[in-house]
Amino acid sequence: MNAREHTGHAPPDAREHPGPVLPDARERAVRVAERVRDPEMPMLTLADLGVLRGVEVEPGPDGEVVVASITPTYTGCPAMATMRDDLVHGLREAGFPRVEVRVVLDPPWSSDWISERGRAALRAAGLSVPGPARRTSGPVPLTLGPVRPAPACPRCGSRATRPTSEFGATACKALYACADCLEPFEHVKEI
Amino acid sequence: MSDDHESIFDGLAGGDSTQWAFGTDFEDPLAGVDTSVPEGVGSAELAAYCLMLGDDALILSQRLAEWCSRAPDLEEDIALANVALDLLGQARLLLARAAAADPGVAPALPEGSPVPPEDALAFFRDAGQFRNVWLAEVENGDFAHVVVRLLLFSTARLALLERLAASVDTVLAAVAAKGVKEVAYHRDWAGRWFLTLAQGTEESRRRLDAALGELWPLLAELVTAHPVELTLARSGVAVDPAALRADVDAVLGQVFAVSGVPRPGGEGEPGGGRDGGHTPAMTVLLADMQSVARAHPAGRW
Image (cartoon, rainbow over all chains, first blue to last red; front, side, top):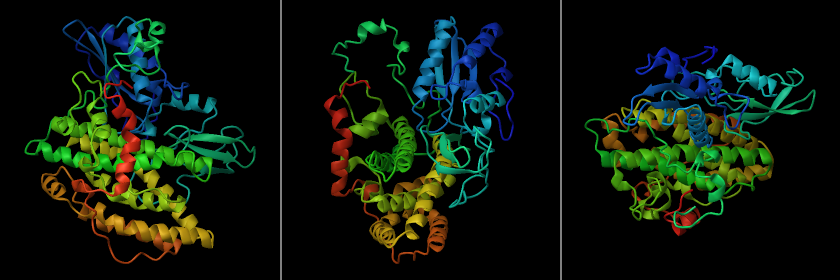
């Protein structure tokens, strides 16, 4: 995986774990898996989004099995099935016939895990990138005002932006409008 | 869709299901997750508890989905659909966890049915087998009604999930830790709209007061302990809902104070939803939610 902005705890890097079988195969499987893109934000790879949590090659009764672990951004994320299928498809095409995709629920995904390269890709696609996720100990405080400082408009850079909804076209995005260039834009939420 | 019908699309796939955006393989939402029951914990009780929390999320999700295309504007329509989706995701994991703890809770389906256990629980149980609170099931009203419903529900649920994140059941703990991040947004949305309606026009205030009057008594069921919750709270699996009262009061008190709405007096009696007792509205909701799945019990979706 790529260099991450470590504002919080980072997901385990697949390369940190010694592979039990053929390091070459594992290296290759990791590279293939890291190229798979997010189905809803295709400017990002699953690795850049931080949902690809690990790739291992394990021995199986019929030969080596690639085990890829992914975590949902949001619990109800409907893209999980597509991510799984895309990983299986990509790895099969790369010569790994046996692929198993596992779900990792703990620790929960954080927008802090989006890599620097991922953030650059989001900006290039006209999206506003998340700031640091809110971290609290104890009860989450109620927020009746704006939940974050006004993000800069990704089109003109103006700070004169206002939220139109904390919920957008996908679970991970909020909607904003810019008062200067008058364009609406999407902001990837901090969670 | 069904195994015994040939699809006109079969030839297009050429036997390679991975070319479709959504594959047709069975998919377990807990694939690879350790679902063993913690030592000393009754699997039937754990399953019952997961059904309580899962059914709350599932049934309210269905009510929120009914708002689709009916909200005052597009942004709020999308907001309600997003909240519904988050709750549906929580429900799916919780129902899957219930069936993993005690496979006996899932209704039996014809042999070879491809319906996964969480879907069997959602679509093939009758009203008396659901354990959700009445606040989740009562019929929708106007926009003020859904704002008040979500404020009360998400305030209690967030207080619950914050504590449940420390559960000795690692699946419940993980679902809760993730849910905290989601439900915080739901509660903020409802709190902001509560404030807007309270300080809007005479009409918006009248509607808000009416919704609060109707729904306030239903809050009690979410903060009153059921015997299953008490048993599991002692083993560190569950949260005693009575422990949520102080947090719920503090958050709602904050909303009431800022919006100038007096806290309603009195407290309701739990309706009995945790033991399968439901309002007539529940039967109608289930008929709508379950009719397609029940018409095709061997369907593959």
